[in-house]
Length: 441
Ligand SMILES: Cc1cc2nc3c(=O)[nH]c(=O)nc-3n(C[C@H](O)[C@H](O)[C@H](O)COP(=O)(O)O)c2cc1C
Image 1: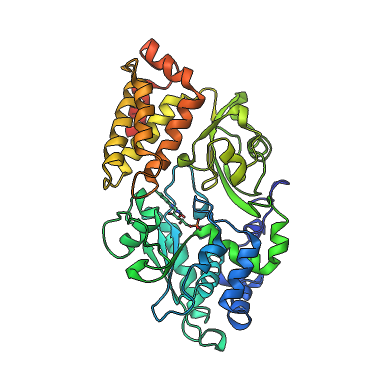
Image 2: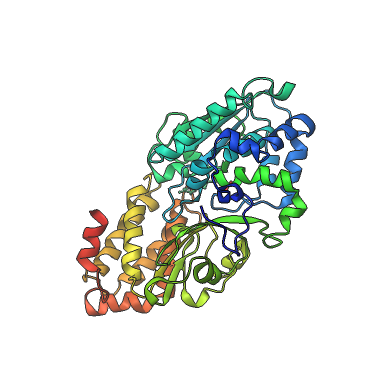
C-alpha cells in the first residue's frame, strides 16, 4: 500500500502504509501490537474495557451501526454458562470488501481486537466465521491465530492471570444469509443457515444456547486502536453521533478504486472526486450505492451528503458496511437493479413466504422491464410488492435490505424505468439481453 491520501486517517490501517510491513506477528508486535490486550487482561476489568468502548461511541461496522459498548454490556456479568464471541467475517454484501483487507494484510489486528472483545464480554472462546469463498483470508487468520497461540497470546492463564482464551476460524457455508447473525449461529452449529426469530437475543441465548456477542471484523479491529489512543482522542475523528474512522471500499466507475480509511462524516463527493480521483473516462457521476447494495442508492445530486449514520438516514438510505459503488452516466439503473434482484432471489433462505416469493417476483418483473417486455403497471406492481415484504414483516432484515436498492432506484430514477417500459427496451448500450448474458456468464 502506498502513502495515505491526505484525507485518510489511518488508525486501523496505519501499519499497512509502512514500507515492508508483512502482517507477521514479529512485525505487528514491533509496532506495539498485543500491548492493549495484555493491558486489558492484566490491569483492566471487563467492565472497564466495555466502558472505554462505550465512551468512544464506536458503532458496529457490520451494517446496522449498533453501539458496540452497549452490545457488550448486554452480556451477563455473573454466569456459569460459557460465553462466546463470534467475529462476523462473512462479508458477502455486494460492494463490500473491507474486512478481507484487514484479514489478509493485518490479521493480528483482528486477532488482538477479537481477544480484547472476548475479554470484555467474559468469553473464553472466539469463533471467526469466515466467508466460505475467502480461502486466503481464512488461511491468513489461521496463521495469525497459530502464531499468537505459539507466543502465549492465546491459550491458558494468559500473562500469568487466570484468564484463558481460545480462538478458531470456521468456514462459511457459501450463502449471503449466513452473515445475518442468527443464521451465522445456526451455520456454526452445523445446521442450515436459517435466521432465528428474535427474541431471544444472542446475549441471552446465542450459539449453542449460550450468551453470545456477534461483531463484525472491522468493529473488533477498532478495539485495540481505541484502547491505545483513548476514547476521547478517538472521538476527535468523525461526528458526535458517528465517531471515528471507517473503512470505505470504493468500486465501480472511479479512477482509483480501493479501500480507504476515512473519518466518518466525510462527504461522498470528497471520497469519489478527491480520494478516488473522480469518475473515470471524463464521464459524469450518475448515482452511488452508499454502503453496500442493501443500503440503497443515491443520485448524483446528493453527492455532498456526509457519510455518517444520521446524515444518510435523512435521505432514506443507510451507511451499512462502507461499500461505495459508483455509477457513471453510462450505467443503466434498471440493469444494475436487475443484477441485484438476481442476487437477492438466489440468496433468500426461503423461510418467510414474503421474502421467498417476493424476491422471485421482483427479479422476474425487473428482468422483463430490462428486456423490453415491461407492462404499463409493472413499476407500480414492484412498489406494491416491496411494501408487502419490507418493514419488519420477516424473521430477519434480508427482505428490508433487498427493498432498499429497489425502492431507492425507482424513487430516484422513475423516468428511466418508465422509459424502458414505454420504448419496449433498454436505452443504454451493453444492456438488455447482453446484460443478462454477462450476469450469467
Ligand atoms: C442478510 C444479512 C447479511 C449480513 N451479512 C453480514 C456480514 O457479512 N458481515 C457482518 O459483519 N454483518 C452482516 N450482517 C449484520 C449482522 O447480522 C450483525 O448485525 C453484525 O455482524 C453485527 O456486528 P456489528 O455490531 O459489529 O456491526 C448481515 C445482516 C443481514 C440481514
